[in-house]
Amino acid sequence: MLYPFIKPLLFRLEPETAHNLTIEMAKLSPVIGKLTGQPIDSRLSLKVGSVNWTFPIGLAAGLDKNAEALTFMGHQGFGAIECGTVTLKPQLGNPRPRMFRYPDEQSLRNAMGFPNQGLLEILPRLRAYGGATPLGVNIGKNKDTTAEESIEELSLLLETMEEAAQYFVINVSSPNTPGLRALQEKTYLSELFTELNKVRNGKDLYLKIAPDLDQNKIVELTHLAQEYKLTGIIATNTTIMPDRGVGGVSGVLLREKSREVRKIILKESTNLELIAVGGITDPQDLFNLWKDGGKVAQVYTAYVYQGPDLLKKFHQELVNFVKKQNMTLEKFFELPLSERQYRL
Ligand SMILES: Cc1cc2nc3c(=O)[nH]c(=O)nc-3n(C[C@H](O)[C@H](O)[C@H](O)COP(=O)(O)O)c2cc1C
Image (cartoon, rainbow, N blue to C red; front, side):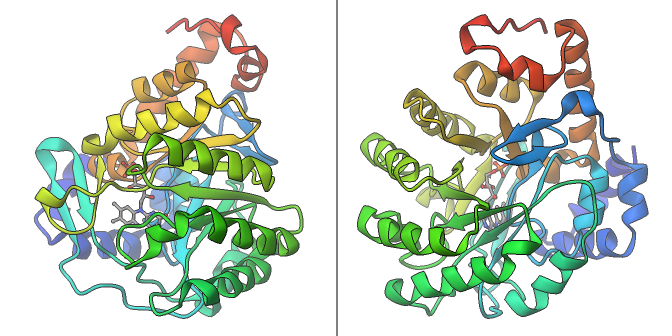
């Protein structure tokens, strides 16, 4: 209700300025988050790994990089909130401008480069968070850290924050840190997962992958995640579209590519969880994911364009869905894929 009035004002500002203003407002006034948000409905909760998502749509990484607006985002009705990417040391990221809008295509392009306040600033906020919505933390290496050093760095990040969140995500798929995507290599990841498994203390752990990988690589990473007993894969990060400029593109322009990557992962029929992200814009995208064999999704760009109405729309569709199915979502997902009927 409020967002249609605020959005034209925000969209008149430079995208990152609008983003920062939104985070400031969310930080100062969690109550606005509640007034414009959707209440938790137990029929719509779902177990993902060992975490109880309160709703099948979570907040993707990168929007609340510094974990400043967790309570607000929980009140909005997201089913899980992923903050970060958090790095060990604070860093400024790439020079501005580094966020661009494509309103006609409901898409964004960003070349942020992990600007964030670093582990020591962010950790107390994670510890102070007491909301009902589960919390995930997305971690990455600092820009000037080498591949060899990054294993120790990521282990330290995970070990230090382990008790303060419900799940963790390794981000080796951002196009905005030079050389980062090269870390999607098998030898590097095998070593990394071995070290992370020593410190994760049973905590859920995901690998977030890029949409710009070929099919063999996607299959290889899926098997690797399975072999090292990760909880699952988050697919996908933003896509490179050099004709648009530097950075990674998200939103509707990414939708089909991202879905194809997810289909490859889901076809491998492992016991991994899949968190879908990339172009999830309408309830139909979630239903398509379910038909492909997936369960939960995250959003970033669609939330920028639609605001709290996005969650309202999903909430209404999902309440209708469980009513028509006459069972909770948790029960629905206990059915084998072949026995699920989509009474929409
Ligand atoms: C401005 C911006 C910043 C982002 N920052 C991060 C980040 O720090 N870490 C990360 O893993 N993903 C980051 N992402 C990627 C999103 O989490 C998500 O994977 C991607 O945008 C695709 O989802 P969408 O189409 O719903 O936006 C960022 C995306 C945007 C648009």
